Image 1: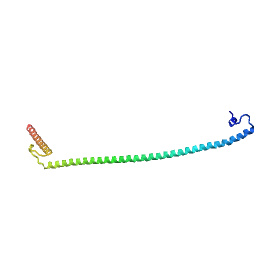
Image 2 (image 1 turned 90 degrees about the horizontal axis):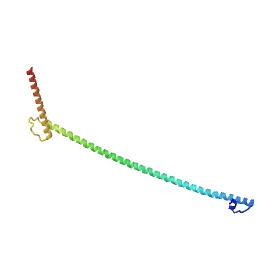
Image 3 (image 1 turned 90 degrees about the vertical axis):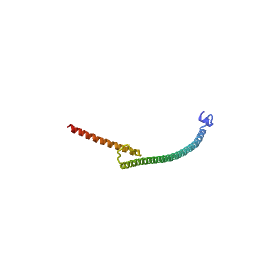
Length: 166
């Protein structure tokens, strides 16, 4: 089917009718083009609006994510600070306990030394003291003294025997 047949002209058509038809077609074409252009323009505007809305949503979501991230970071920092404080408290209580134990030990040592100063040397090792620490110390002292005296006596006898042998 030819162009003219589509427009409704069958057979031979005079040039004038073709010219008039051509002008009509040209007049109609711009109006169809305008409608299509208008449709395209409206579609483009819709796309632009949609893109703007999507960008706004994305920006809003990004802002929410940033806020949430900052909030989580803040909470984590607070928890970390709390844990550090708890650890510090634990360390200080442990140090305080250790220092207190050391003080108690030092105090016990001092008391023992004071008691030892008050004790006179007992010649009989069978004498019993009610405090076992002091009793052991007394016995040890007595034994050491006894050993020292025995050693001195041996040395004297050796010297005498050496002198006699000369």
